[in-house]
Length: 571
Image (cartoon, rainbow, N blue to C red; front, side, top):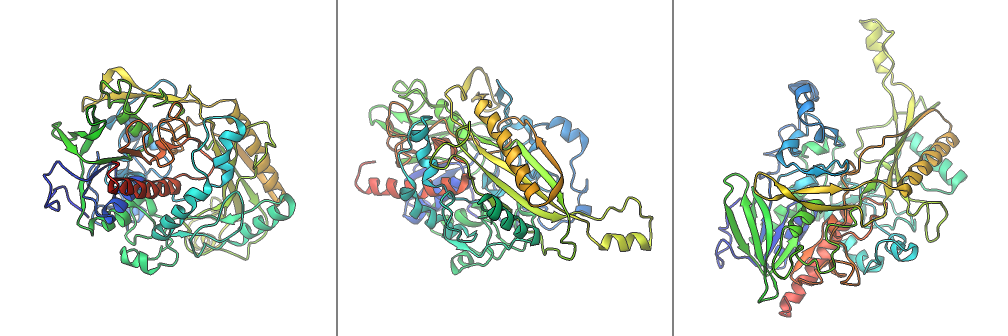
């Protein structure tokens, strides 16, 4: 893993590079890989600590009984960290990849759970790893239904870049020929267990809906390219968020950053809190980045010809809002006035679970780290509900542990636990939300963090469209479970605050018109051509699919464009 020095920069001062990437997570790692491969001396700025593969995975092989609190967090920690302790996957074995609540405060004008991971690799170490492609249904939707602004691209523009990314990352799945979820470059899919196969058959026969093995960023069968990365086959431990010693799932730490480092063109600087981007009015472009050392609090400036902003959606908004100048008094590139506005997220509020009889003679093997998916079936090409947008459903079937409460200790207990219990099926939704100007973030006018940077104010909430979508999922999900023979179904609306989905998007959206958007079709700022934004902040709308694979594709595509423009001396 690259260190903190610039010793691999023989023809540059430590402050001057060809490119700067702000953030080392999923999209930042891809920016680094693509830039370095194309020969650019690249500096990656990460506000958190350094992480090295294997060395910094302290719990990767521990059993629960080998941890101080058997995998749970002590009560005092939970009292001090009510926000982060709600995050999916957070526990004693993964806590090292999440920040504590006090380490970066923000102001919630409306309830918003901002989940963050500050370290080299960012949230790529703890992401859910689901990788469905968007279709033209999603790219067309804003124009068709009259919300947000028109996407400046369509599926055909991004499809080859999806393929480019999938081959390197390693995405498993089956080719299903489903219009709402295009096929990709897949490794062998995880097999469905017997109840999941039953669900697939019922949903197809009774609803004409699909129940498929999910597309997940796991190496089920490594290719030569994955072996060159030093990654091996997923061992089905389902301990991914601890950090995988096999590199079985994709992260910046196991894949893109080491690949970039091999070129000799990469410098990674941890503990680098980005204050703002420097704009030179005379040159009419950004020239560098101001950084506050997270430990010493000293400020340093780094300079480059192009800058990629990949700090994760809300921090990217924060940095750009704080990047003011006489040319851009309201934030870098903000001629349109939309910076920080039209923040959106994914709606995860609906969940259900039911019991199903039979199948007692069958079980499943290993601990599959991927789920099944029911692709969106709502509003595909035409509106067929009282809400706009759609939702994907994640699902799976499993066997309960035997009920041993009535069994006494001894031989009878040992015999009872050998036999697993009955089967259950679960479903939960991932719903599209509609971008609205009122859903926004802005800088506090009075409060600053420990590095002297204004706190971010979040003002993001649900609307009537979201409520109708949750209601529809709860009705449709129950109908599907009942049709499959499930009973004792428990359906639940969590009413969780936005943000806990960890799919925040928008604020620096792409669009065709500089008057209503921040970025063009290449993720390039309309008003500051040498700055590119390819993380979740660039999103014009949310779609219903998991977004990370799209960020990676956007990033690779944008780097290709940026380097081509540099060669033409346009940047």
